[in-house]
Image (cartoon, rainbow, N blue to C red):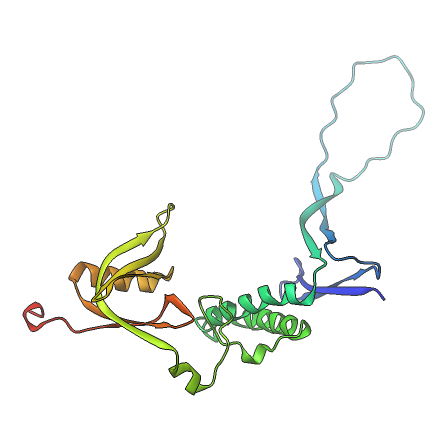
Length: 243
């Protein structure tokens, strides 16, 4: 039986119209195959008819005359194009990327005001991603918003309190990759330095301030990931530094 891949295409003429695009795949598909669909939008183009170059005088006689055409020349041209690539994979291979994408998009959607014109667009997109997760065997209702793209799965409240470690100290250094992007920091504790990884801009600003002002912080991490901070507490500086 042939399979169908469905996506949504926005019309260029009617900006509020969304048209479904269905691709029927053959029933003889094999794992590892990739089907490509190229879509082009054709429109009319117009230009003024060029003025003909006057010919040299001739003694030839012509019977009748050519009818005068319109002043415009019309032809068809490509306005836009895009390509869809449909890989043939197992459900398990396709589910993992969708479960990583959904929490990030839900986290982004939380920052879009309801009166923003992109809010209904984002909501529609989230419904599509959640539908794909459900169709591939996942549970979109168990995935919470998360900026880390780690699945953001909801857990019972008592499980959230278990398996946490706390380390207190001062920031000993900031870590950047070869592109100059923030990737973590060093925490100087009583047991030595610990490497903590994060690419969040807010964490970069926070630990940079703690490093610059020599503030004491407490970092909470999970036992499952000893390098990923789950929370940071910035302690009040000594009274002598508050003036």
